[in-house]
View: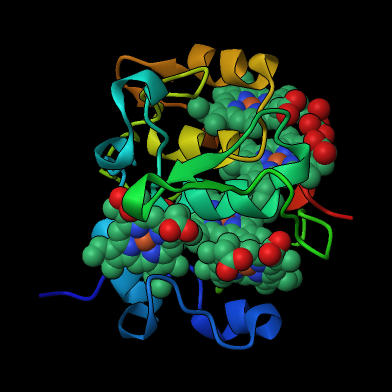
Length: 179
Ligand code: HEC
Ligand code: HEC
Ligand code: HEC
Ligand code: HEC
Ligand code: HEC
């Protein structure tokens, strides 16, 4: 099987985490995280009917949201083992969130992203099934206005983001996040 595209590296994560491990020692590789944390995975299995709708744990959505918890403007709570509520609303990066390369390698935060990626199941988002680029951007840009902008620029044919946020465009991802 062809290896999946590399987007972030554990070495970068561990500049802050020293030894990142989630769910115990046997799952401490990024490549393993995304085997489960795919675009359709939510915490639905751990919620009671009263706690629905479920929350997305798609890897990019989850990691972006966890590290911008204080600026999300809404709770980001994932129900885990035994129905425990993990509230990440108070977590934040100790650096400017525009510093994408704190996690990303090889400018993978920029558009365009790979073609033919899946839409993201996001039951608690303004858009409950955004396209792959839209979902990545909206996991930090949480306003209703931003979601409406993404909705408007997503055509039946697909996302049109690269027209204005592509590498040579006036509002390229690099330009937009320059500090
Ligand atoms: C610039 C520093 C920094 C970088 C880089 C970073 N993190 Fe974090 N991360 C944090 C901080 C700070 C928290 C919040 C800790 C807290 O409040 O307990 C956090 C929380 C988390 C959490 C929530 C659970 C926990 O362990 O506290 C996960 C999961 C996580 N980070 C994964 C990652 C992954 C995966 C990467 C790389 C793709 C990454 N982090 C990169 C600083 C960073
Ligand atoms: C075998 C599948 C699987 C793998 C591999 C996996 N996860 Fe998870 N993870 C889940 C599921 C499913 C949930 C949703 C809550 C639940 O069902 O327990 C979750 C929830 C989480 C949560 C939020 C709840 C909590 O327990 O803190 C964090 C943070 C997390 N995963 C981080 C990671 C990271 C980082 C990796 C890779 C190092 C990883 N996971 C690998 C399946 C997995
Ligand atoms: C705390 C770590 C962290 C930071 C900081 C971060 N990202 Fe990400 N980003 C991730 C993770 C983790 C993924 C999913 C990686 C995977 O699927 O292998 C991701 C995925 C993405 C994707 C989808 C890429 C693809 O090919 O599927 C885009 C686009 C993106 N991020 C944009 C950004 C932008 C823009 C910034 C800065 C303004 C940023 N990210 C900052 C962790 C981070
Ligand atoms: C890791 C979080 C993160 C991700 C992911 C992210 N951004 Fe941003 N972005 C920011 C922050 C922080 C700013 C500074 C202004 C602010 O706080 O909204 C910003 C600013 C911008 C701006 C300048 C206009 C403004 O609102 O200030 C544009 C345009 C922009 N981002 C586009 C994008 C696009 C397109 C994507 C997806 C490819 C994306 N962003 C993904 C965090 C992020
Ligand atoms: C016709 C041009 C155009 C297209 C197409 C377009 N955008 Fe934008 N976008 C803009 C402009 C202009 C801004 C505002 C830039 C600024 O204020 O610096 C913006 C801002 C944004 C912001 C920041 C919003 C905020 O206020 O927080 C995000 C996120 C974003 N775009 C994502 C996307 C995504 C995802 C797509 C594709 C689904 C997309 N855009 C398509 C022109 C466009």
